Length: 228
Image (tube, rainbow, N blue to C red; front, side, top):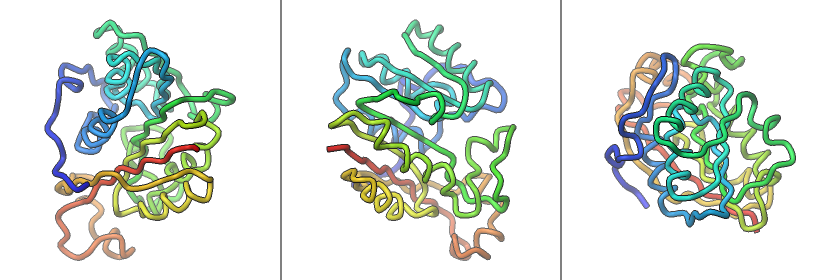
């Protein structure tokens, strides 16, 4: 399905956003729309990787799911906890690397809006807002980790929803998930204008063959993978 980025909805209204925390944008909205198609209930265990403001985790909690959210950024963890308190919704928010904090846990649904913007530096940033988007020269550093971890995170019949840019190879993500014996496919796309981060590194992206000259729009992709 190809669509325009959906408009902001009530799930994102009135959020507290502390400095340095990723504010919900077009990729968050596209993932929220995909989340809306999933069946959730009181027995559904949900994990959000890289929760940021907690908007999507709280969207799932409002629908009755039991939700765990994890983020490597302390400001994001504090923000998500504040938003959960403000909305009076139960949300377990963990700080740290998602793989370490969820070891031996299993979920019915995993959602992720990971860093996926290609960046000149190989090493991921250790602080600052760039942690929410910089993902190494091919934009796949965190995406690949999620692909590798997904089978162990999912219960039988469980699903992964992940959003990324066409710039960092969605078919590669589908293939890696398939290699991990998950049934994966692209389920939605949205075309959005380039934001300030992409515009600031246009020359580098073009030199790496990741963007065409004078390109003005980015295609976002939702990939859904299911464990048999």
